Image 1: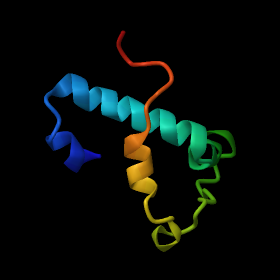
Image 2: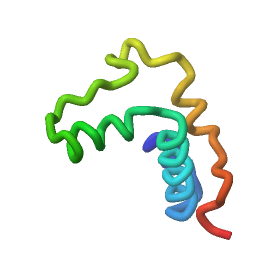
Image 3: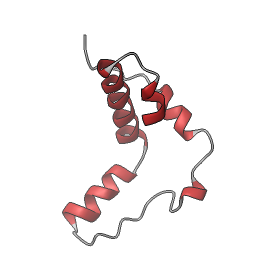
Length: 76
């Protein structure tokens, strides 16, 4: 995301990209909820990430996240 943001025309576009990424992760990946559970709810600080390692991350997941267009735009 940071590397692709360098090619964007400005801060507004970078923030819109970040918003889209956050929305994609929050709605498609269970790790946000798991991180909150481990840190705030149970306070055990032992998240059980899915996938458990970087090697298990599906190829193309980054491109899928960067291609996401939010249903509700950041700005109208």
